[in-house]
Length: 154
Image 1: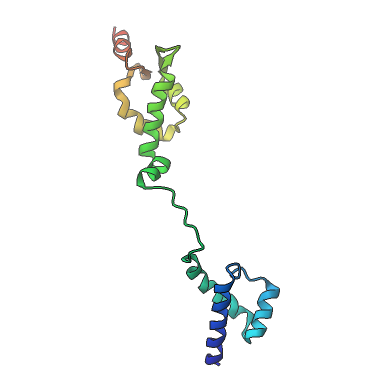
Image 2 (image 1 turned 60 degrees about the horizontal axis):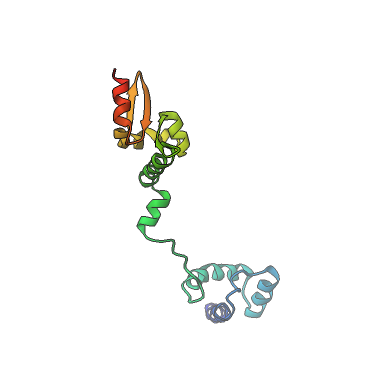
């Protein structure tokens, strides 16, 4: 029996090489092939499962690379994404009609689109643009933050 199985396996492998769509065996086709090769249908499915990995390395498959590590970090690493959102927010929200402006911390966080659970961890890196009084934190444009601090400390 093992000799027959080996011969059937070789024929089966040839079918895979000839027809790239063959791995998705349909019931009626699998039954016919099983009868032709004189093997059990389940055996065909096992062979198909084992054969699929070798098909993936063929010339026909297109591998879709997304980019390098910098691209990956820019898409998924909070330590890259959130500081960039804050930096963009500084340029976008801390100006009003071309003039330097300020915002309350909560409003600035919401405008930047950062979750409250991640905000403080990264916002503390921008202390040079923050001023506080009575537990309230304010964000100011770099051109006016020193004046804001003076006004709060009077």
